[in-house]
Length: 434
Image (cartoon, rainbow, N blue to C red; front, side):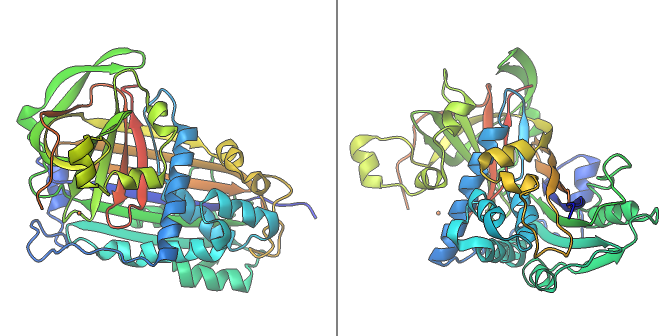
């Protein structure tokens, strides 16, 4: 039987941290459901079993592998967890080597599809309630074209683990594209309202699987940058010097140094969410730092041995230090084709006629195209980021500190937006000035 195309797993992730002065930011802050102080906003954590910690480790190692493939000389941003949601839901329809490859690439190995489901459900149910100053919502949906029927077990797992309820429509009715765009807009606070157009919507598709993740918060108390301290300064990009708006503050922050880079961590709200910046040392590149970065290595930066530090002075420990900080305002957008990247990472079968998705629906299918559009804005008030992934299927004391620490991000660097108790990565990107 000829394998047919379905447009599947469109995942939309929005992240916003806003605490600002302009009219747009004021409007966001004045949302009646978001408080403006941390009173009664004790930080919550996501408690994980050892098995669940292994899931996060695997997922984050996938994040680093993915970004190594994406990173170039341009400013880029991707959302690894968006890819995980997209492929995780679809993976419940896969079998055999196709499912094994997806499990391995996403970092879940022998924990399989059930492991991916458990991770996605954990984040879906607990991430939204960690911080009253940070709004997080995760939504999933499935649109099915008339004439095609989903496997009942697939439907049950979609409802149980992803809270997705399939809806059947006639994709040729002239309305389905608008319905999907409205769903995306409704679940991203109108930040992504026209994701599909006549060039990307296929009325002959078997199905569209959608995921939307919305994040909105404020910088943690004392973390906001003073706009009066922002000055135009020189940024040394890979292709020459640029003039950028450079934000500045000199405050106590979590900061670390390694042989390859300097690391700065800034937090949002009640510190349930954070962004880590990695600034390669002079003579080093982003790829030099990324080449050996794993979840275990990143985690070790926060697991400091104070006696070791005091006796050896070894770097690589995140310490609460007074840091002179300079960061450029960031505004980056990316559009990344994922077929070749995901295939190279180890799941080629899903993209060709060898694909095995018999538990998805009665029609043989394979992924014809997988693409992610993403964007980020970071300024004195906070950070705002968004990602959309479409899969078109063809069918925590006194401690030492670094003295006179300086973190001047005047050359290419990368950053990670993550949940702090699990270190689950929501976004990973780089700023090169290009």
